[in-house]
Image (cartoon, rainbow, N blue to C red; front, side, top):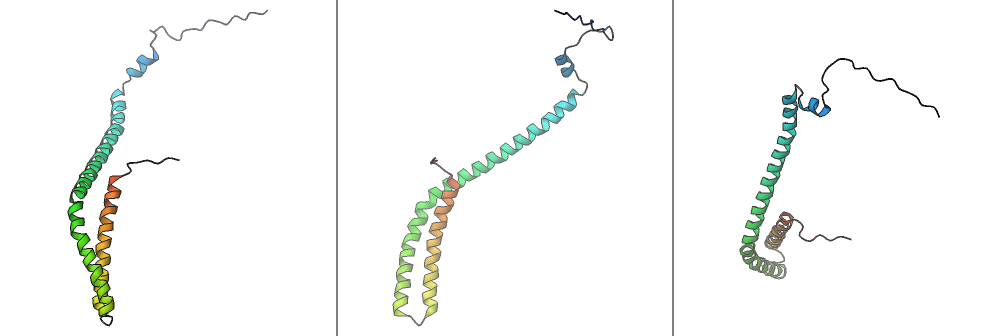
Length: 134
């Protein structure tokens, strides 16, 4: 069995040993390091504030739309019913007057589209409540 003796390391200078952690904490550019760490934090904070404001506005708009929904549908449903009846009557009684038929037809479609758009907007603002996974 061969034993190899390694020479002892020579010290470069006679000075006090400083731990690596102490050297990193006591750097002269510590303020620069803190400043550069502050900007990403500030950016994330501002981004989160904007997300919170958008989420709050979405929630308030959703609450308002849900609160007004019964009134809107209470007014539009009878109107749509009357417009459909008028459209069908105009189809059979005044076939020559296309302006009247088209007018009632377009008003009926607009009322139905308004109801659809109102519910679609509520659905989009509400987000997903139930997550279905496969």
